[in-house]
Image (cartoon, rainbow, N blue to C red; front, side, top):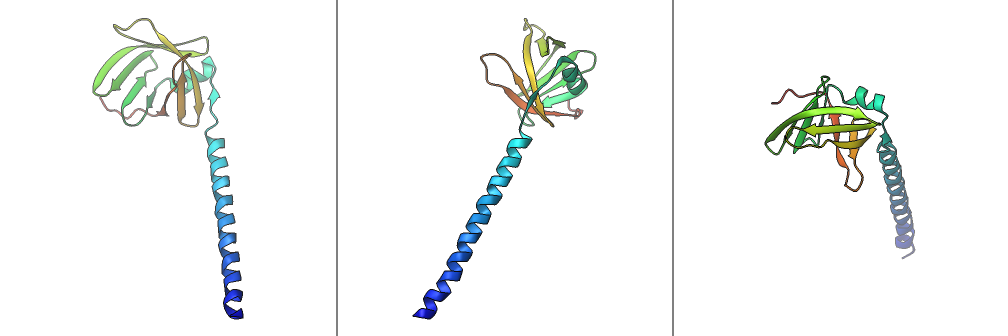
Length: 135
């Protein structure tokens, strides 16, 4: 009987050690993900530099092409719209044809991730990427 309890102790210790290592790994990965997700509010110049000539998309339902000329083309759930975009008071302002007035958003980014934030509404989340050439 002494052999069985002696054998169980190293196995139990190994299981406890693996559990602690797994927990530590999860904490490290989670803290890295949080650091990566830290969005920063962009200024007017930063908005122009990061948005002009680029496409914002959720990679599934919608995409908006922000041309350097100030034109914006949106495709959302099969519906295509065009309009104008500009930067005003550190906000991205977008006005689609036949849908005035313009809606203005704070732009928050971290890497490719972007959030367009507007008072009283949930943020519009997506990524900024090179235009795909889809029409």
